[in-house]
Length: 348
Image: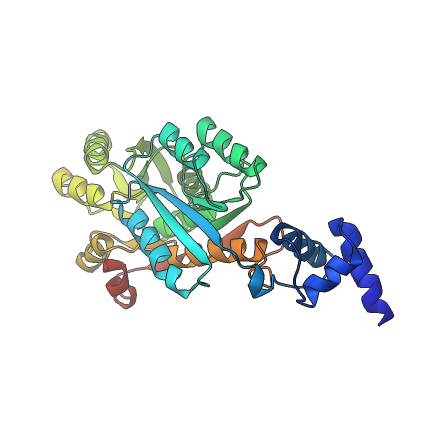
């Protein structure tokens, strides 16, 4: 009993409230303001007591998910992941999805600043306007979780995504092992403002330096995940470099790579390593156009992002990871022999 009194006093001191208030909350006797209740729960956790807010304090938690260009295959899958996740949550938790037609930094930043929700989950490029918007709402007490690609220079609360540098190194390793002869590799990405794409290409080149046996990077093309732009850039690059042995697409438009390779009629089919398991990439794997697809599991990212916020707001007892949060989701590799197991669910 004495130890309980000591713990209650410690929690009360850390939370800045009276012992009686802590006792009422932890023993669910009510009459504690919701904001005070959350303050007590967080103090208790800091002292090693894993507690959650009593159900009577679940007055409504709204999470806003901001995704740009929802027609892109990966963004479509991420949107679907949050849609499928929503029905499994407590009725007091709402996921609001804001889908933006374009990915202009000023439009994303404007949407972030305009949020009326308790927390924001975003995928965005590392741009000063977006970094500033994240900082502004964080300062107002609204935590931000990044998915797909991180914003490590921002005030974001957590990142729930894959290790893109490791994914790029994996691509470089297999590029080296699959290559039949020395030669050059072309890399395609959105642009280096997307931290994940920059890390992937850095990982690719680092791995080729170690495992490449004569593989070098010929060009890095920035197609802004636009199929027409990416196809044109790649066709022109393949005309300049007839000794290409591999193409690495760090971004979205795998269809652009397929079309460019067909138009270029190279003497030898290059290795093609890309990202995301979509109906298009499954078709390319089946036909032999694509050698390997690296998938970043958007369903797991959505689940982790929400779990982090549920714990932060006192809806879940055990932390997903110790703070500061910087979690990495496992990425998976898919070739011609193992993509069938997941192609049906990615096609929906």
